[in-house]
Length: 83
Image (cartoon, rainbow, N blue to C red):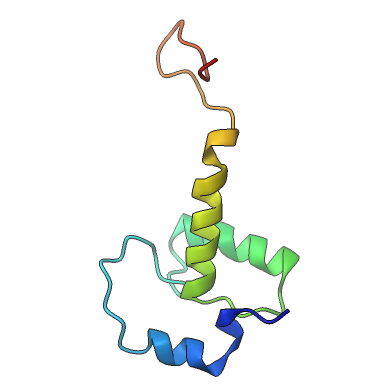
């Protein structure tokens, strides 16, 4: 099923867009997040475009799943997750 970033309108929507850059740009190859997201993209859906909409979606998915990942203790003797 084609996504929003597959359409020609997607590039037009991003053209001239000004943001506060809370996420790295899809073209920022020095960012470790972009490297990770690019690796995931190329492994599971290489035919889809890799653009800023993709980065936003992956960042949202990462943030959504963060509470389900185990966390390291913050200090000696503390539990790694609330019970």
